[in-house]
Image 1: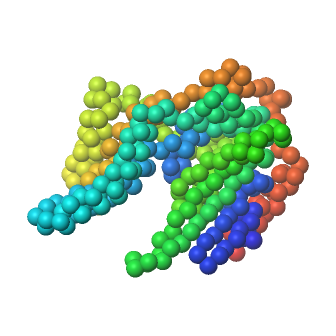
Image 2: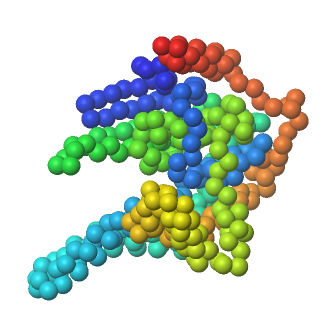
Image 3: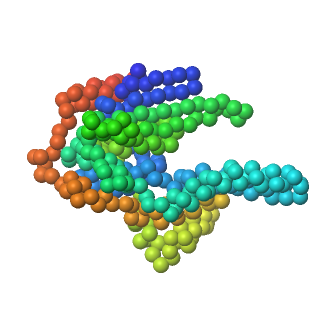
Length: 317
């Protein structure tokens, strides 16, 4: 067990950090590294796992490599068709998945109600669960693989929710959100966006990504030309200021990562983010008088105090 997490288990090529319950501080600052904060106020926080922009930025470099491979083998006879078939398989299937996602509704977010200390998990068929915040589970998983190019670490944060109905069928007893963030400290930073909001308040976490604000700011330029104009103007400004490193990074993000396309699709799909329209959820999401706010359980209060003491000792050391 480590002093920065409720519990951890480390294997030869893997590591698992158990973050909750109890939802005690991890020692990391909340950082929304995957654009999961869709909406927040003093009553509730909406967390979504839909990130089409991240998918585009993963596919884009592979697509460039495949285009280069096909072009390089254009006069190589059978090798050309082999390169074409391989490229179609490697990037064709992910592109089809992205296209399907573009024309499908965005999944509803999970809502964390700080004043009630409860979580609402909605489903596409109109069902929803409302469960206590202190029953939410969180685990960060990281796996290492070693190859010719060294060690590569992959991982994710898994946030789990248990059906409050004890008589629910086996396949309907659990639901989870998975965030591909690399595991380890990055997963803890992402988890802290949820934990810090519920325990410390809205001001304790980042503002989140204001996709509606981005669309309004672009105005008459439109999403496509407005985003491209912003990136190209940024390169020009950095070059004029002799900030060559920043200009090079923007150039690489445009042509090697496809960042403008990723941002454009995110704005199209998440401006505005989906609302929870069930009347019962709307009523549940209304603010309460301060005297009716739910409080931490004594067990969680004690666990937080102990963890904070351990973290302070680690910082002093």
